[in-house]
Image 1 (cartoon, rainbow, N blue to C red):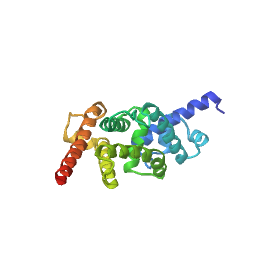
Image 2 (cartoon, helix red, strand yellow):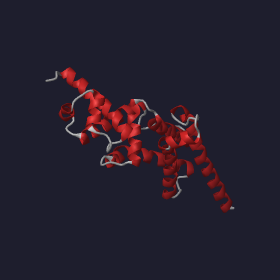
Image 3 (cartoon, rainbow, N blue to C red):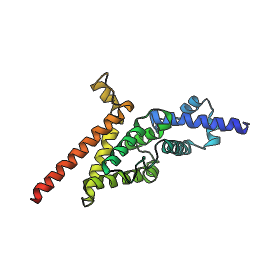
Image 4 (tube, rainbow, N blue to C red):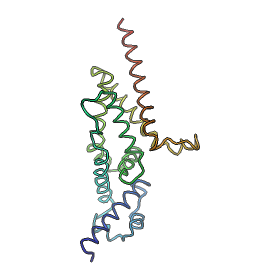
Length: 217
């Protein structure tokens, strides 16, 4: 039987291995056997510490969410005193950092991005605990910029457009690298991507204001 110190090391090894495997291949394709091989542990150890694959997945999501939130706080470092445009840039930069960073503390961002395209039974939990609060923050920022009297549907569409552009850089990486071999649009270019996404939203907002002003004449 493992002593307490050895047991703790085994559990930590399983968590690290599971985070890597789930992030790389997704929940459905990940196997306990692959995780055990990566961790250098046996199946009995996973049963002992977590019970089953579902329980392990939930534990991994919560563990790496905690790590991600320490590195990238839920409030995204946004201050109330900042201008709305600065808040939006901070939001986009933080969002891109979470999903583009490939080091293991950012595995939560990769797991979350994968859940967007390959939702599992855990997706509803993620929506309520993580996605909804984050999206609510974005819609509040967008409403500040385009005007708080704007239709709620317009605010939501604008917010979804911003998130969609962010996710494109993550999910379309294989296509981008084939279209433009030798060029990079990854983690090292988050500042550039942030400005690019912000520019399109600000341009759209400026045009809408001009159209409203013209109609008001």
